[in-house]
Image (cartoon, rainbow over all chains, first blue to last red; front, side):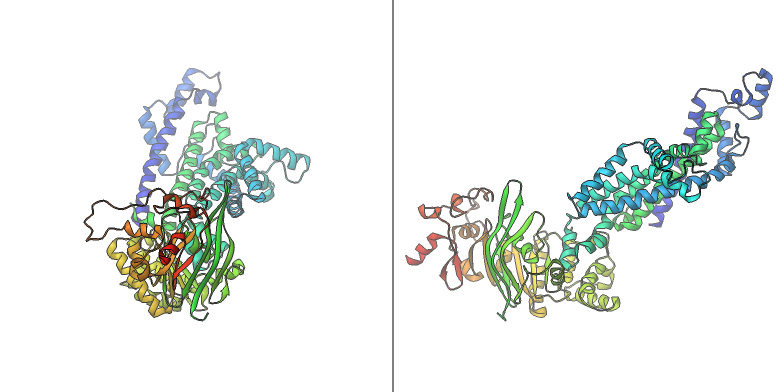
Length: 308
Length: 325
């Protein structure tokens, strides 16, 4: 199991370098000139040239990439053009806010999703099942920005139960964004949990457990759930990326100073180092999430432990 | 009554589907004397597994017991609540299944799975339970029980897994063990070992066994008394020796004829014509009549079990003729 995990971690490092290269190249392909954005249209050409040399933008791209990668591994992601502060510092101040939002949303999505999925499976074809599946379908179908704005309009603006902007509102401010962001994931988790659980309940070993004398609830908790949860964990890892992209929207709608909002600001200002930093950082989070899911498999399913 | 472990009377169980009621078990009566091994034999889909599951009250949706009584040591099982029935399972009746490959939970150590069964019914510590499991492992012939205890199912062979299943079923020393095709998925040498083991446990643990099989060889090997099922009904019942020496029902005769023996010089394998009838469209009268070589006018009427000799019952009009003639 340990060699398995070490291997996965080494793979992860390679993937990260690849991703860094990809982001680096993509941001150089997009139109727009960072120098002009920084200095305004009316600067003289010499000043532009001087600035370009100062930032190392006249060097060939592989030299630039090498400098960048060196920086990444020492924690130096460059300096934001538009905010004139170190990118790592900007990310480290805004990241905790995104983490709070993501954790709140994941709690909504995963806990509510799994519990609703179990209840729906147990009460298959009952009223509760249809109700839960309906609500989850709604969550899966309606985009995050729509949910976010409707919740904000109804519950924050009209009813004034929650603050409109979450920036300085403490944990209460995170309730609406978490629901907006988590509902979608909760919907797919609930549907997947229901279907895998129903499938597992058809397995022979479930009969064995019942023949042993377990009651239905214990059969589900002790024998079915652990087998049903593997695909759900895969989905959770995949959802990490959609939670992060959803966070961009939610942070913008609810004015939370997180990574997502930082990325939006970077795009608007053509601030390449900042954009590069935020995108790379989000990628790392997603990759780590997948790594964690892989390690969890090994713990949960002894059959996977053996494979290399 | 004291010497009867299980008494099933007029048991009927059906599947309720969109296309109608499927009578999978139709008026079945079975007596299992104490310390005996009873066989139920028949083709796939004849209702033998459904009968077993009805006794355990483990019918899969949309199956349901619709009538009859099931008495275990005089206790009426059909009248118990679900919770009471759960306490009976594993403790007084237990069951082993056809597929040892899929009957064990893949993500749980086999030792723990057996241990659960005893912890559920006995007030003992985990340590005592583990001791009990290891003792049971030895009893069912598992070598290196300490090592096997910590194995996962995928690390064990089919024969070993079935031994684990038997250990699990027997750990609470139940009055009755229902074995649903316990050796079908195993190869022949392992099959013989498992059958020997079950015979041995019947004597040491004092358990009665209901053995379900489509394999007449297995039935002949271990059973004291045999029920032959066809289309949800019992068509013949007799002690094993009589059944094999003097089968009366045309279906039983057909089953016997379709087994090859070593001395048999005939190269063509005897078969029974046709297929098992659709339980939704059973023929009028005797369910076997469309496939029967001895069919006559009387077969249009419903047949009842006729006692052709003491303890030898046959559901065929013609068997009476034979007796008279």
